[in-house]
Length: 162
Picture 1 (cartoon, rainbow, N blue to C red):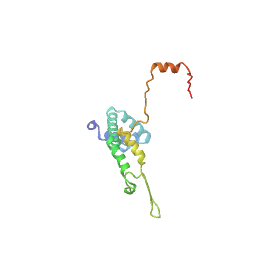
Picture 2: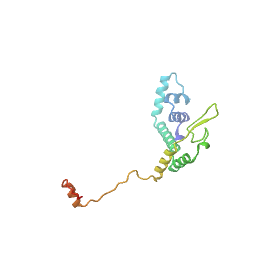
Picture 3: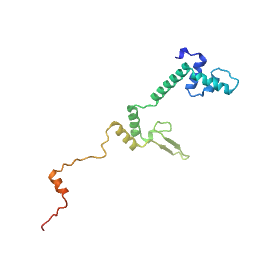
Picture 4: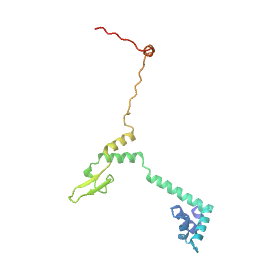
């Protein structure tokens, strides 16, 4: 698709796909206009051209795929991070460390470091690995039908001898 577009169409489509509004993309792509209203109309007409619209869609789809691949963590990556959060002591964390959520140094030389909660990290790790024991245990009790009928028939008087 890229090869069939005129250079200024390609530039226009790339700018629109990257988030620039169509009018600004039109003007930044080398087109001249006497006023902004005319530029808006001309930009709209360009967005309606089949080959330009298809190229914009192609670029947006490619960007979304790249973005998803860059922002999606694998289970292994999640487990590795949680393992580091669990095992790394506070003494090994400075301001730029990946586990440092906040870092503050006071005038007396003391520091305050906020790190992920180790207990929460352990819980998430066990949930991801499937090693967390079930929270409740269900027990099935088999009651013989005769005892069940006796219980349903009403209160029974029990007599105890002393």
